[in-house]
Amino acid sequence: AQKITQTQPGMFVQEKEAVTLDCTYDTSDPSYGLFWYKQPSSGEMIFLIYQGSYDQQNATEGRYSLNFQKARKSANLVISASQLGDSAMYFCAMREGVYSGGGADGLTFGKGTHLIIQP
Amino acid sequence: DAGVIQSPRHEVTEMGQEVTLRCKPISGHNSLFWYRQTMMRGLELLIYFNNNVPIDDSGMPEDRFSAKMPNASFSTLKIQPSEPRDSAVYFCASSLDGKDQPQHFGDGTRLSIL
Image (cartoon, rainbow over the protein chains, first blue to last red):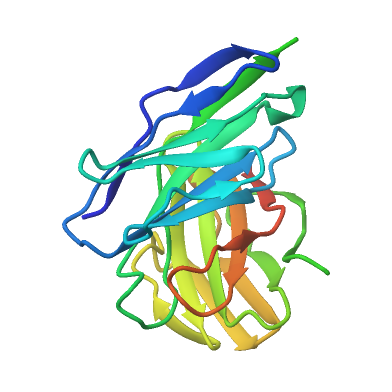
């Protein structure tokens, strides 16, 4: 069974500092994908970044990047130069079988990390 | 471009009443998902559709829950009869076909059953 672990329930970070949010996962499927979402206090879920298990390079998207360590089964989200607007819940999610074809199916989410950026 | 549209945004009703949540996916997306978010259990997948066909409803908690997708632009999640433990935020999400495609979420429906 898929499992996602986010060990940091909450984090306080000073504005403009870099932030690393931890995510470890457990799967026996070598073909999987990892997704990160942001949920501000307003409640919506915003897709940030995706990493496939066979991708040769770590994913980057603007100020977001993934520190993907396959052997350790970790996919930590790095936010560079944090801003006050980055304060939110952050969720790591996984889907198996991404390279095996077939239609989309559901994501398994971690419990999330509550990030607070302080001025 | 319009995102996933959910209605209502908030619903407060009494135990035993029927509740219907509605979702309009992003045009062109052929996969649709219903999730429930609670403090205790986090985000849970309830059911998903591919090309309007229900594929996996194993996450639906009880027979009181049902979901339909009569066409590519509309889905409903119904709870009948509702119970206080059904109180949660219910999200609808849609995506293009393919397991590497991200899901795009609606703003959610905050449901309170008194």
